[in-house]
Amino acid sequence: MKSKLLLALLAITLTGTATAQVKPEDAIKWRQSGYAFMAWNMARIKMNVEGTYNKDEVVKAANAIQAIANSGMGSLYLPGTDKGTGWEKTRVKPEFFSNKEGVGKVAVAFVKEANEMAKVAAAGDAAATKDQFGKLSGTCKACHDDFKIKDN
Image (cartoon, rainbow, N blue to C red; front, side, top):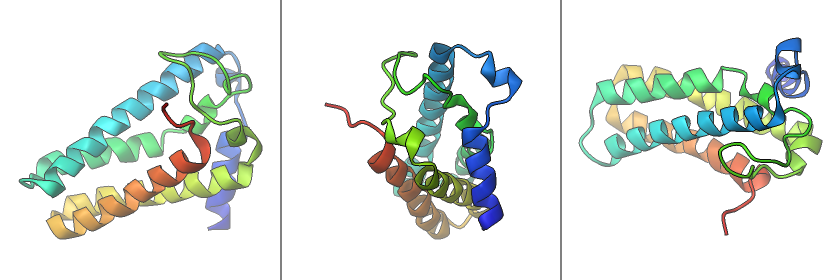
């Protein structure tokens, strides 16, 4: 567990040469796009666990979320991206950049639950999928509560 936390912290704090050349507004756009795509896939799973269950649709959505969770999006939180505009004004709280331990904890939890979501979805059990979806959603909420500026 400590090694996963360390890896998450490194992914968040280290920026390679490729990301060092990224303009802050582009980094904000790309992470906003990633989160929007993830939100669509979360909605797809929610519709299935609350309505008519379609395993194939859930698997597709869970795999997309897993891919995003493991994509290294933390590297898009470059210096200077605490303020600014991508597709819209960023809503990341300044605490995201100073609370590395807290960010690491929510990042590790999200990756863990996203990976588990893909496994559970592949098994096809609607009740287990609904339960795991709740766990995954909880990790999203934890990050939003601590690190996202609320909409007015």
